[in-house]
Length: 419
Ligand SMILES: Cc1cc2nc3c(=O)[nH]c(=O)nc-3n(C[C@H](O)[C@H](O)[C@H](O)COP(=O)(O)OP(=O)(O)OC[C@H]3O[C@@H](n4cnc5c(N)ncnc54)[C@H](O)[C@@H]3O)c2cc1C
Image (cartoon, rainbow, N blue to C red; front, side, top):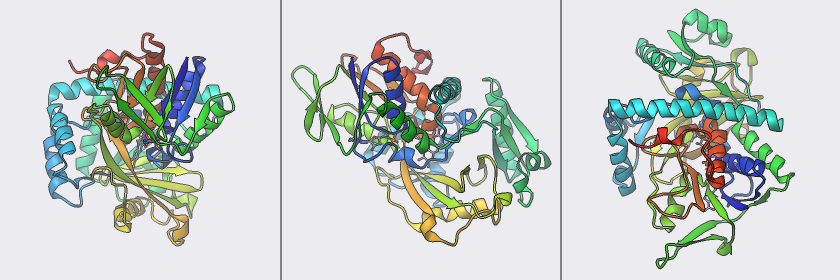
């Protein structure tokens, strides 16, 4: 059948791969001029399945209060009066209790494991080199408080089959010698977590697919209309109608607006993060694997001769603007762990970027052929992977292809629905 995928980010291109494998005629539409030009452009590049934990924790109300009142907090509510945020926030807080947290944790960790396996299988089958490296990730703790939280988290994820080890300062330095000059108390080491360049993956996979008959059209703004008479819908590319047997919506944070055109309320809020890419000056001082500073929540990942640093979760609507001030924290935090590793002298070689995580209130992705009982199964939704869309890209793509084919999903989706 003919299937059109809307969006050529990580999720859209991964979906196109599984649809192509199923033998469909596949076309991918995107408004940008290349794949992975929005959120998938410069994320932290960590395949951090062991951290696939829901954001609505039982103590989330404290995080929300801090996000409203502390301008130095990594999570900040910048537009507190946004009605869309109120609706999203209400649903988010409805999950912030022990029972829901346990249910969502189980679902999300299991799904992340399935997704990482799928990603590895895709890399093997296509031969794509995106610097995928599975040497574990190190989450560094600079205080006893974060070490104790990391210990609790390691115990929690161990119940779901993840091997996360709490290591002493010396053991962490043995794993990552460039930490020798840093002031920290210990770390958690997630043995099966990995890293890889998500932009390289998306763009190389798109090239792989294009060479095998998948059509990509860029510079194409996608929109939709809903017929009030029969609730049928029309899809448009630059206002020209497009025809297919099925469509997959993979528009990342913009899926919300697309759904709105169909009178649907998709529970996705864009959560802004800030990404910095800096040349490495001294490899002996730089980390050899990715990780996160648990105290500042700055994530880092070596990508060839550059280092990617990301942090921040700002609830600021669709705004993707940034100023130099948004990146001060990245530099301070990284330099305190790995002093002298990066070359900050030449501004023209440093890339700043801000992009939006497509977050759902539950932190689980939206993978369904019906939203609000709308539709006849011809519109499949694959969006809302939030803070962990690189990790979840291939597993989500595979399930979307299952939904298109109307076959039993490869991962039991019913674990992910609200009970
Ligand atoms: C700072 C930061 C760090 C992150 N780090 C990690 C990490 O380490 N590991 C991890 O697993 N995940 C990480 N993520 C999350 C991950 O990057 C996202 O979940 C993922 O990129 C989402 O991919 P997507 O394809 O859904 O969205 P996008 O990449 O935004 O793709 C959507 C596509 O749709 C197109 N589009 C939108 N609207 C239209 C329209 N109307 N018409 C046509 N085209 C349209 C866009 O051009 C875009 O190409 C991070 C996110 C952020 C913000």
